[in-house]
Image (cartoon, rainbow, N blue to C red; front, side, top):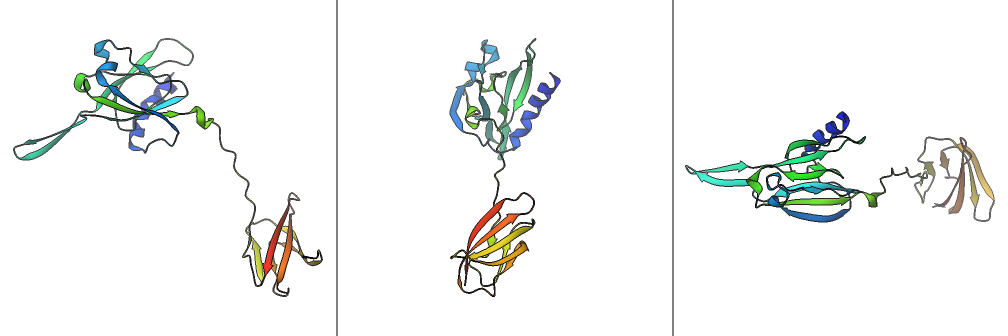
Length: 213
């Protein structure tokens, strides 16, 4: 339970970050009085599989002149969010001063607790977590590049591994054989060649078509 509370208490820090990089489900514009505790509202729950991000409330900043000076006053959104223990039990509530980009997770009940924004509109973006699959991306395997291609002499594999390398002409004749990750083709005639490089650590074979000019 303490862990859940800690996570939720840290959410306001996200107010200084950019918007979430997730698919947007919808944009909500909610009248303050419709989710106000003083109107005995039950609030509104963030749906499962979604996450909300608070963007703005109209009338949050009031500007006026006083003695010839422009005065700007901020009226942040004061909210109450519910915290339900994973293992069940009594629901607890947190009263929060909500910053821009504040994140509200699925299952949380959201209400406002002050009448300052009773007739204002609260704007929220809803993101879809389900479409992301919530799975970690498997690192993509990259194939070493043989460069430069075309070449007039030297070639190199951009890998620190050691390879058994064979070079063939287009007729299938082996014209070079070496070990390493560099090839000197300076003595070969201008033509197109096939380079086969076998990784000595796992016997994986790589094949390249190289133009010698």
